[in-house]
Length: 220
View 1 (cartoon, helix red, strand yellow):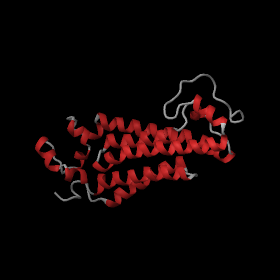
View 2 (cartoon, helix red, strand yellow):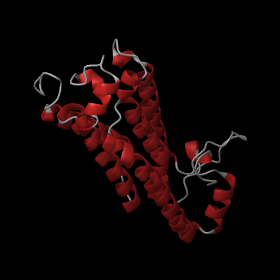
View 3 (spheres, rainbow, N blue to C red):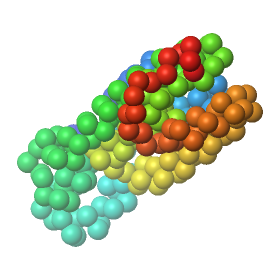
């Protein structure tokens, strides 16, 4: 079976899909600071690696091909659908696009982009006005932009896991946590006690329960 027959070797399609998701994320995120660009750059590298395997060269299937064929002989590992590894492993092989992991991936990806689109306008206005972002989702979470990226990356992993993305995922989560801490140090040096109180009131990566109306931009 040729690569094109199996749904691979389609490098133009890989480039189009990677460019679409990168531009889609950029349209919500619009990086301004060096921390923004670093976070967005890591997300972009993950997406490029993912679609390079999804439509270009299936490195994971080639590396694991012997083990997969020996343990799952009923699966055609040269087919494009076989790239949905979780559906193949757990027996959902009729149409993996309707499998539970694929559906869950859309929930994570959609939720991540929704959170990114909700958080960025608030942060953008605050950065332009030189103040803390404490309204909207920032009243309940200090770093929703990084949480959004992790949600999207988790969705991609559920949909099409690869060796490269599985290795890079924990590294990216660790890097996002470090970027968040560096941003906090920068905010502490700029806003002092105001940001220290904000850190005590609002968790970094988990949603705080609502305790009344969020402060207005003027109050923040």
